[in-house]
Image (cartoon, rainbow, N blue to C red; front, side, top):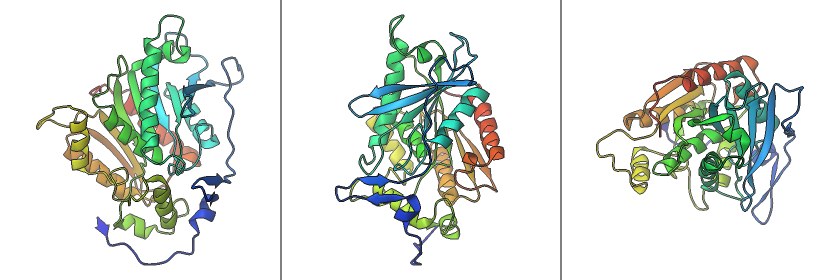
Length: 341
């Protein structure tokens, strides 16, 4: 339930909190101390999961890190999970330590081939740039799958089942998954079939405050001033938090479907099933529950998993929560009840 915006001031400086410095040309200097990890290559016998980096779009300088279990055999055909990291659209990369480790665990324990996309960041590249990069990653996978024998990316062609593809994202990555799923409607993806969308603590907003945003306005992970600044830096210039990228609704869904020239009439929205997860200590929990209601109202099958405890991004630093996330993902990925897209 939404309530009017609070006029209370906060002592938090969001730029200092995020360790970012705005530059006169509109770019950011990022001073984050979270390290990046290198890829392993395909011959590291000490790692249970092998990783390699591939170029997706040299013009946009986008790339992806692919993870696969070292003991997977060629033609084993594991599910393909295309992953989008969090960071409020403005921070981090596919190489950032917690996201790298999370994807490695997912590849090992599902098991699956995981492709973590390094999309363009705002404010240098405001939304919808990240959504375009997500769609570009799908088209890249299609191209690899269609390549002649001996060509294309072997880790996709030889190890991944592209007909069992899932889009997954955490926080801002969950938002990207939602919008990429809509943009994929009507695309010719060839043998690539999207079996499901996984939105882990997805990042959505609005100009009116929710109860959870006000109750957790001084949250240690994503306090309200930080939340507001990330949207200010990510959304198109001049847009507020009620823009469709931040605050989608049912009419926005139907508009996207119409633009994709998919005539659904009174039929349910042809999105694949969705797994939406959230935690009670996350200021965004009310937004996440609203997204579930909206999707269900449009006829989308939603597996909603909301937990009373836990904060935003909790799986990145609490092993038990990371394990619980993997349990939910594995059950969702290996369920056979999915309409494919």
